[in-house]
Image (cartoon, rainbow, N blue to C red):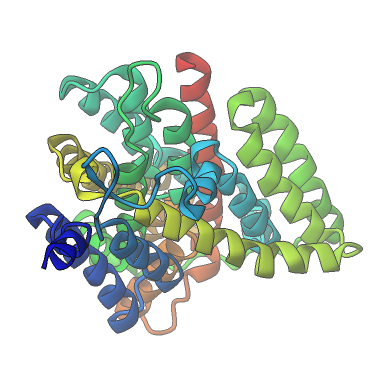
Length: 384
């Protein structure tokens, strides 16, 4: 009997708390949403399963129930890729190798919509300061508004990593960012309808012009130089993004581009998702700060969506009658690629089944990726 009781005392059942139960339900919810509704399954399934792993407690020698990040655990070493900011640039490499910037090159003015959507980042930054977070923590929270998970993880690993008096907010920020990325089809349509009239939603835009191969090759080179000088802190992200795109567009490194956009990004996504998920132990995740982060993240995402739409309406004031912008595409200025662009396409087809907005929406969508990385670099340059 003594042996049995000793066995039970070291089992997960003996050290289980209500908090662990809540987090396990959160993990199951992520998996359910991914499978049932196809909400970002490549992200939510690894994260959700990681949440399950991280919230099965066991007893350490000190007598304190913890998760999986003790000395010698494989998760401890895999998580170093999150803490040191290694995984996000590798994901950006794959994104660059998958992305076609043709629409942005053919309509450079649409880049302004991606820039306008970043207003959510800076307004949430100010809001987080008012709620008591310090400058570094507020900056990491604000970047959630870009709906760019890798950028959010990268910035929080630098500014809100538990060092130098800052809270360790990597887990809550990453979960919030990826949650809102997955919920793009739920969050954005009501805002799009609220801020646009039926007449505006029916605007038909000119087809984008054909872009030459030379332009496609020059874009990542020129883009890197311009954005790198503006925001050197974002070079790990922007450098890999534009490098991946050059691999794709050069047409002489197809094997490398194929590796970057398929096996490499898949492997990194698995490692990132499951380690971030496993970092959400109940004792560190179920806190007042985490709740505030989710609330601020939702507000930030809604502001970013509204910012892109409203700026498109402002641009239409100065545009010629035959060159108007459908304001719906402004919602794609957030960095959730390509989900925001797909939502724009879906909402446009609901109004007019012959009005295809996907290609137009991709321009602010990919510029939003660049814009959120630039914003992160600017915040880092001021705060590090």
